[in-house]
Length: 298
Ligand SMILES: CC(C)(COP(=O)(O)OP(=O)(O)OC[C@H]1O[C@@H](n2cnc3c(N)ncnc32)[C@H](O)[C@@H]1O)[C@@H](O)C(=O)NCCC(=O)NCCS
Ligand SMILES: Nc1ncnc2c1ncn2[C@@H]1O[C@H](COP(=O)(O)OP(=O)(O)OP(=O)(O)O)[C@@H](O)[C@H]1O
Image (cartoon, rainbow, N blue to C red; front, side, top):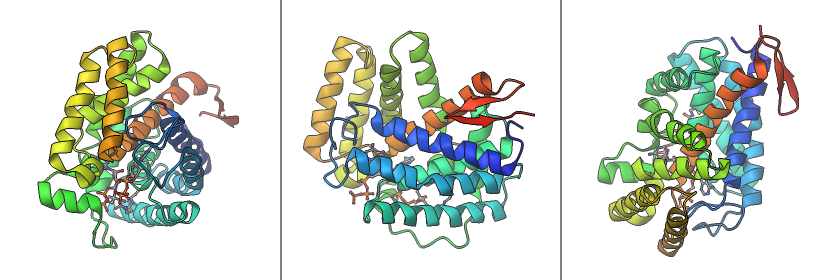
């Protein structure tokens, strides 16, 4: 176990999850999404709102880590997390005046926090994602009947959406986002370009119900192809790739669509990446410091 107690586990994972959300929103320029330069295709969101929303979620993320520490994936834990997650959504909506800034992110990060707290082993993203997936496969008997945009897209087009991604153990995090992030870093490009490449790779592969809801299946396919094109041109760090990225951004804004699900899974990727770093570089056998707080390993 990296953490000595459930309190320490909750605090550490809460810090990492909020930091990952802030990393995601501050990454600029993201196609169609809120970032430091613009609100993309969103008339109702700005970067300061996204950051306030991310911070408002700390208590919920901490509570999820605390609840799952050293436990196992079972129905009881699934329902406890669902209850904390729903409270988190209410906090978010209270902070944002009713705007959905991080609904999908609470879902993905919440389950991955629980997976990490169960495994207690920060450097194994596949294990963490699998534990998160096992949890997602338990039924939440208190769930409300879903009437969301994503549910409508799932019913109309048969895509699996945020639930399917989680139930399958977050393949777009562990098999797409994380490997592209790590490969890009190995090629010695900047961290910003590496993160943009990870986002583009997720966009090129994900059936994002945010895109489907606003633009239909045709828009989803165009966006997937155009994101792949940026990568084929050499990615965000190449001149041709950068220009194609600008065009993709303009096209998404013109279509009023945004890859919100991909943004959530980038945040999830950055979360598991931060977790690996904390266990590899900050904990060692004597413990260490992360985000200004001391953590002691066993
Ligand atoms: C399952 C969730 C996402 C709700 O699903 P629902 O169908 O109502 O929402 P919807 O499909 O619209 O998706 C919500 C968000 O997921 C993101 N998303 C979209 N597509 C995808 C995708 N393919 N993969 C991952 N995320 C995606 C987007 O940001 C979207 O806005 C979740 O909010 C939920 O059920 N919460 C209840 C609380 C809970 O059980 N929490 C568990 C512990 S955290
Ligand atoms: N940087 C970001 N910019 C915009 N959206 C993001 C960002 N990061 C994550 N998201 C995700 O995108 C989703 C918001 O998408 P959208 O505005 O389409 O929401 P909606 O309420 O489902 O739909 P609509 O606004 O079309 O009714 C949120 O659930 C959020 O998790």
